[in-house]
Image (tube, rainbow, N blue to C red; front, side, top):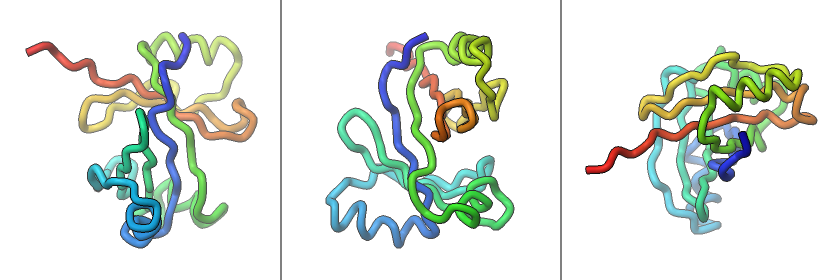
Length: 139
């Protein structure tokens, strides 16, 4: 199942508002919105760029996976996200190829988007997220 496109590139930061000073003010990217994500325990700023986004992610506690990542590696590139049409088929293909997954089954974002992470051990050191976007119904 080939990827459709790069959906976003996530950058882990200590504080979303501080990071926005560069990304929004110095670089001139528009801010789409900021989300407080209880499930992942992060605040996320979404900045559209072309067909994708830059996501600035900051943990809001010290126990989340992103907080542990930040403490160990510091701020910087966190993961690359690609869209797929069928995340279940993509996961089967990736697992059958011997890749190690962080999520064997997809999780669901509040907007219905399905997502799962491939472990960096299997990708040459890059944390890879797969997205299956919510299909928009015709009105």
